[in-house]
Image (cartoon, rainbow, N blue to C red; front, side, top):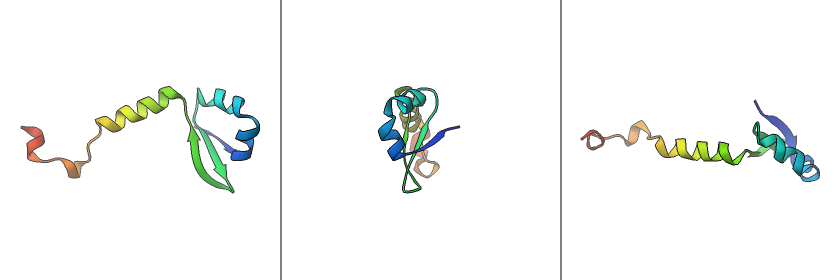
Amino acid sequence: MSTTVTSSDVQKNFGAYHDRALSEPVRVTKYGRETVYIVSANTFHEMKQSRRESVASADLTDANWR
């Protein structure tokens, strides 16, 4: 679950949304469109690590298994 806020709300209350992002992603919108998420450093590093460990099935070849 995430909290949705406008970019102007984030600008006015950054500290509050920073603290909230430590426990859940904060979805930021601008002109009604989703633009960015604020996430904790831990969440970011977990996502980055899982991306490193993922391999698309199209990229698998017989050489990967030898």
